[in-house]
Length: 343
Image 1 (tube, rainbow, N blue to C red):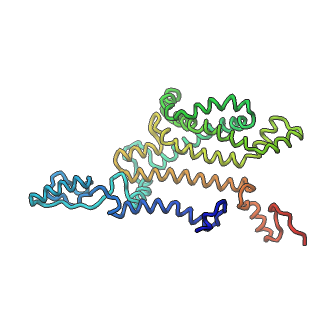
Image 2 (cartoon, helix red, strand yellow):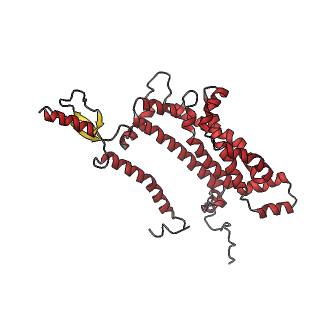
Image 3 (cartoon, rainbow, N blue to C red):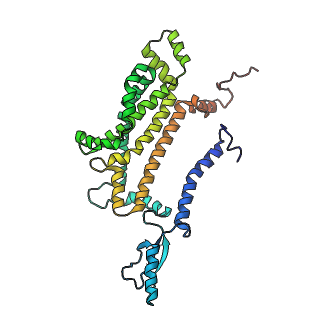
């Protein structure tokens, strides 16, 4: 245990895998304990037999205090006493109920004719994220690079960007509907507003971290300002820019639910709202978990690609290097930062 808590010491592959699994297992364990162990937290009672209480129905849930009060009244009159079992509120389903809903949501047709299936709603949400983040990056990435490279451009742009980024993106919802209508366009606009301003500032700060010695060396060799930006600044911080975009893409996902209620409710948000209206909370949890799975899967995929594109920034050997080592049977040492010793 002490070796795991050593400062700045990298974890072994087995430790990383074990701790990664534990990070998901602990919340699931707490959820399971709360759901399946009655004496921990079960503030409700599910009626098993109504007895002589006229308004009780089998399967209904009510607070313990209300159940005990009605039970005492019936007991005082020597009537048939109702029975019940401990239960959690309806908005906190057990893990197995959510797991069942996670499957059934994809195979159960919509309640109303004309509504979308869950996979169709998910695809619409993915399109909203994709186009919103693509438009934000198309403008925010080059602007952030220039802000980081040129103090004058930063001074011209960053004060107003810093001012606007404190304005909540949902506040622009009515305005976006007035400009773009009620369908997909205002939702994309909310994603753009929610990510663009932060993107410019984060990218500019990353560009400013480039080693000044690289810039001075390029200037000594006669590099022009445009060449300094795109052939020195950008290549020097490209791995960090890639990671910044990964993080900002996660930021875009957090605006999805807000964006999809602008105008006509659509995507996974429409599914969540419909299921909540019918008090089908296992489906609500299932949809929320699906969003998390999609976001995490996308981030892991981008991280995997980043390790291959920028292998020199990670301790993990690149795919090309390992391929050559396998082809050569590990007989010829490839460059690892050390000069191989002569025989």
